[in-house]
Length: 332
Length: 272
Image (cartoon, rainbow over all chains, first blue to last red; front, side, top):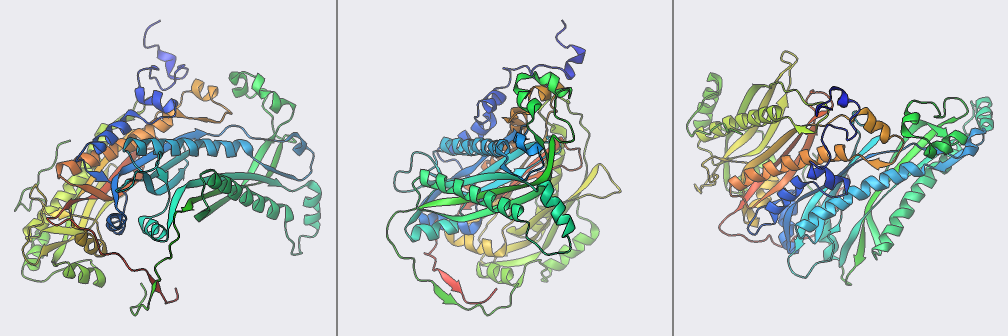
């Protein structure tokens, strides 16, 4: 067979036309690591007398010396993750009310986030950092990767000037200003906590009919209320368990972001559950994949993204009493 | 990448009306896009505004065909986007040099696209040229006026820390993200997995852009870079081609490197 077979474009076993083993960056990514390019950049940053890079604003930079922190470099972590096929429990095919967690989706978000955070931590460790401040999370979707989530986290790695630092860099999404205030009040960040909860809610056929008849009346859509609050509760519960795992006594600055979308989800009927026994090729041909009709349910999927910084009390200090000011200028 | 050279005293690329404007500024009338607060803080820091300086470059961006199946940098596009920005910045710096400025604050770097030129883009750099009142030279080591995207407030905060801006540094990378082959996609269908090819492409491109920005700062003998902004844009090249652009302000220590005074917490009694 010639080395350049003309039709390998579509059916190349390794994909992307790159023979496996030729790209060390790709191998590292596959193993959950950071690419070679990142290591080269960070090595240049960690040499003695090297410059630092940072996403810090000037105000933050000025406060660093107040805290005895040394900026090291901007660090990054990214992961593009494909979300698998989500099925509803088999009972969903009978017109009852459906209310369940979309565990596969939640798992995909968890994995993507963990990979991105791991890479961020690895980059920070390469710089010998004690902490990463101002961690910024960005979730993107690209039209060339449908059904995949792109998770990017970035922040600035810093070193504590005085005491020996922790074993692992402590991540936080706090600005240096907030960091300063916490440290002055005797608290220290213990780590960044983040969670994603995805729930699916669909009303029963009976409720649907009842609502059609009483459409002129004001009424609560109980199952949706319940679904949304359950998703929020779940996300916050995950945050709490992560925080207690790092020995924190509280979480500050929790940001809850929610997105609701109308979805049609497959029900795990007999065929759905058998899918593990099928070869991927048969599946792609569409032969045994559940089709329209009873095998799918319409409903609302609610995705809650929660992120916050867990903090730990270090010593008992009172916050400096703030000085009251009255602004005399006009508002911008 | 070849760098368009900065020539002191050169006004190449500055149109007739621009030269007249600079003459007016030299005669004593300053123009600036500073707010009142910024103007006062910059004066307080010991600088006088001289005039608004502009650099612009309309650039034709070449064509490059990507290998459909390969993660690769689009070097032609990377170079074009970089050189055009550098050209705009250099022209702005030459205008500032003509005014006898020490540096430029509040620089904005924009890209304009027009429907009359599909493969063209206008790169514009705008800022306010400033000069130190006591004639302390604040230029960069290579003789160029310093540039910074810092606001007047940030500029005023930075100086007491014993640092000064030395130049805006940037790095970019236009990257082509490989398409997945059908067999690959089929093999991955319906599963929760990381897509290493995509991760690697986006990761690499960002790292390359940051590395290049770092190299520029090293050339300026900077101590560090603050306020790095990492942007991601697809300038109408199709969805698989993305530009990553990193820009920040490089800073150097002044003779006296010191910390700021401990800040006082204040509470604003005004309603929002």
